[in-house]
Length: 141
Image (cartoon, rainbow, N blue to C red):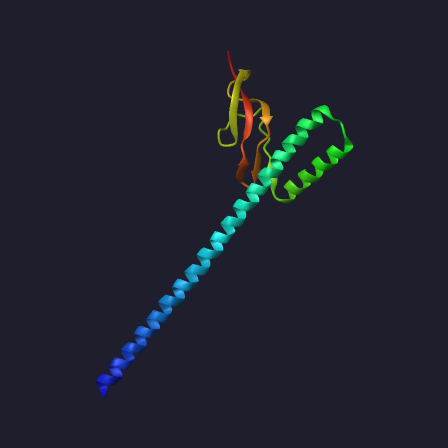
């Protein structure tokens, strides 16, 4: 009889350990799934915001030739959407060239290793670079 109780007690312990393992596996699955969904959302948001940046670039190029209030209104609305989403333009003009935030497109005469001209604006989403700027960097003669 004592053997039967010992065997049943051991089966109970084994079942409890299996249950706890299965529960831990399920909790890990839920955590990983939530992390993956968060990463997918972040990637989708970044892709959408990059498309908005292309539109902003087109509007800025058009503004050079067309002075229109409607165009300026659309641009300001897009800037508001970007700002509300946490996107900020990088201010690089006159600062040291940083390959993390900018891509050097050309070298021009100017102060050594300083950003002399922005050819395309760069943007950050929070602390992460969304799109590096395309810049001209100074090079001493």
